[in-house]
Image 1 (cartoon, helix red, strand yellow):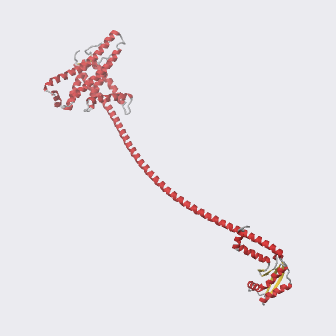
Image 2 (cartoon, chains in turn red, purple; image 1 turned 135 degrees about the vertical axis):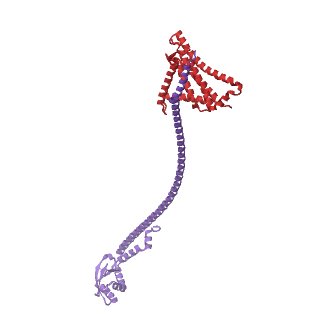
Image 3 (cartoon, chains in turn purple, blue; image 1 turned 60 degrees about the vertical axis):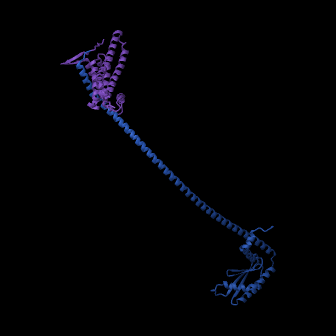
Length: 222
Length: 263
């Protein structure tokens, strides 16, 4: 039976640095993604193959989504960030389906790291677009009274982002593990399929929310 | 659930590293290839638009050329038609002239043939009449008629001598002139001598001699030959002269060629 724990297991210790199984799985996921992209890059041509068509369709879908949310901005400014979030979170969400691997996003440290990155990117693009003062000014709109609420909203939405992904992934894994323990080998399959759907949806939600935060950060005052 | 700063940090670093990797291996190449394809598609569209424009221009040019050719064709056809009309008129005129000439020629040939036929008819008629007259005269001729003609000959003696002297060669040294007398009835030495005397009376310097040959074809009368000239005083000769005159006389010829009224 798969060992399901809320805290990551320390795998290697190099001095003070602790490398957990979550980090190792993430590296594996990164390697798989990088190798796949390397192979895809080698086979890119003006006459696309089936795989290239899927790849281009995915990127065009990301581009269209970004255009819908940020109609006035250059979509390729945020596409790499959003795309990387979607790909990394999506593949990480599905990594737990492979026997022997755990789901990196079922670790609160991972989801919190991604949420902090989302929070940072919203501020980064906001400052880049509006300037430091201009960006800070929007916290006082429409009134100074709302400044604390803006700050609380920033913190809570980041925490909510992290906890939503963490909770969904962890619950999916735990449900599958419990049903496997109770009912047997094949019964969790529908739950595993549901886990796939949930993983993709959660990755999409995480990316779309990050995109909305970025859009809110770079939105000019009317 | 404990917060692990190392895991947190590694995941942040992992994300940044993956972002850089994907930027290099995925976003940039795919973006470039999409841009290239869009450029190629745009270029193809522009080329297609340009080709379409060129095709339209070519079509317009072709249309103008066709219209021009049509005008030239119409003009040429009109010209050809007028030329053909002129040629037709010329040919018709020439054919008409040619037909007229041929008709004239045929008419002339016909007239000539008609004249020849009339002449032939006239000659035949004259010969038939002559032959009939000759037969008739042969039946009714007699020695008395012959003698009567012979007697009339003496009245022509002066004329005969004059004409003989005219046809006599000036270089001829002889004064003797031989005469050959053909006669329908025998004349006799006496009558011949009388004739010679009558002749010599008009040319005293000349000596006439004569030989007599009987020829019943003369019907009645005589013919005298001196040198190459024959002085015919016979009925046959008169008939021949009459026939010759009838053959050459146009009036008689025309009358002979037309059927007699009521015959």
